Image (cartoon, rainbow, N blue to C red; front, side, top):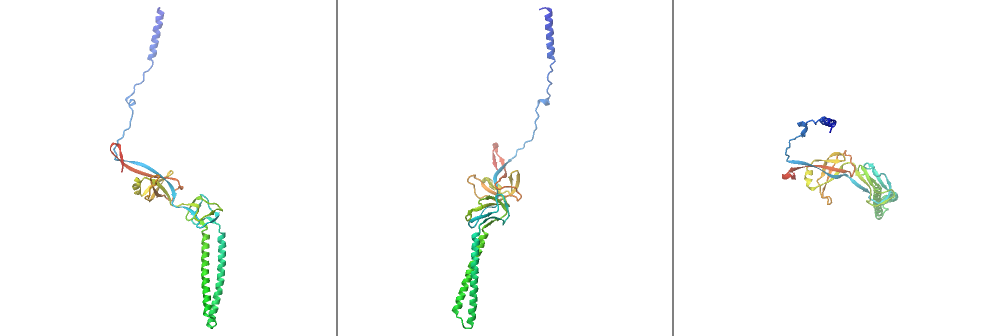
Length: 293
């Protein structure tokens, strides 16, 4: 190798060493950057803990009546439909009363005839008594007229009773609302022939809505000791008072149905889901097991 090649090799080696030395080493980490930060809290052993539960049920009206007629007939008019709000005493459904109207006219005519006959008998009876005073009338004639008068009076009372019955049946040919509420179902149309007691409409009461919720038997004592429970309907929570302590177990769900009275201002629809909140306290046992209080 000549001197020129040696010189080039030495120069190249020096250049590469200088380039390597220009790379800066990473800055050393401080103690604060090397160690992670943690927050500490003081832990205290609690003898118990609280479990939050919710039991589901439905909102129901306190009064839920399927209204029907006390006598059969043909539906002549329907004044309401599903969703209508009605007031107590408002007419809802009516029957055709043509037969009753004809019957009333016949009874009134019969009553007028009996009144005319009674007037005649009374006149004759008065005349016979006057004649008896003069010695021209027999007691048998007076007794006969007296008997006719009493019979006519009895017939008049019978016709009056029939007229009263006719009027009552006409009144019962119209179903009126027994309380303020809302129509939830309609079972008949105009022209239908209905039997006695057949339902025509279902009326739900506006006042005193209830939440009926099934709960396990083991929580009955706890719930019965609570004066005011919390019922959640949708996103709203309402205070509710217990109406009954539970009577029987539902054979399908194995729960006892409790009835809670909701506030008057509750905005809920019949059949809407309602949730009963129950907070129960439990004690810790050894080895992490628990037991209910």
